[in-house]
Length: 311
Image (cartoon, rainbow, N blue to C red; front, top):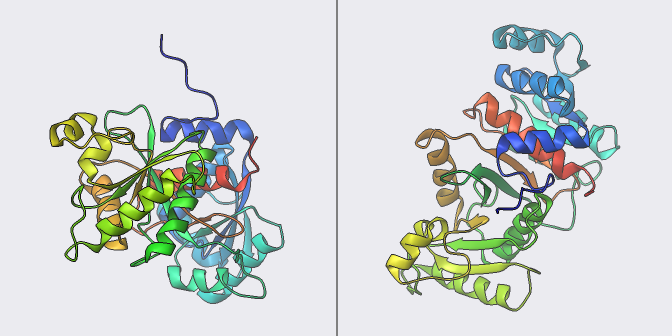
């Protein structure tokens, strides 16, 4: 008999919502909240008890966006603010001062928000590297898979990849995966130098994993996407390992690879995802303008889970 999933180990994005509802929501500051889909997700998060949104921006603009999105924000707190940089600063200060647990991007450019996040006076800097971690449901369902980094680190060198993996492993553990299986992606499963330098990084990261550098987890690399997600395909290729067909974390070699994979999951496979930027003092929800309302809601839930102390 298959053991029932633990309540703190969500196997789907809907289950993730339920875990956050059970633990209780968080207070969320939305910078430049005058964006219809963002408001739809925020209102739904409030209804479900996942988050209590604080809308930062021009009240009239927020009102128009709410009307466009067909939602009522009358019960939500609005903090009047003007330009995008001011919205970002106010939202980040709110989180910095402990008046909010989670930061979310609205209509402003990501670089404007991140500039405030990295402000030395009131920002959310930590000693770690910022990286994006996204979650999606594995082919066939039954579990969540993490993808990193599709949105922050453009062409990370080896030492940054070490931190990217550490961040993602931390997220996996917060999702209830005690010993995450990490797949360091490449186009092939062999060293190919100098043509494919990512394969050398993957090999070195695998050795680090074997040494215990990332704690209790298995690291495989270089490994292609099909082998990471399908044991059958890995066996056909003759490249079986402890991660094959069961990867909990997919590590992209560059932002181009990660971003294309993220958008393929959404646009081609038609799946929603959840994503958050981690490595700061608090998690940050930085949705793409093209993300669905449901993806934005799931991202709020992931950020809410990560902003709470583990039970």
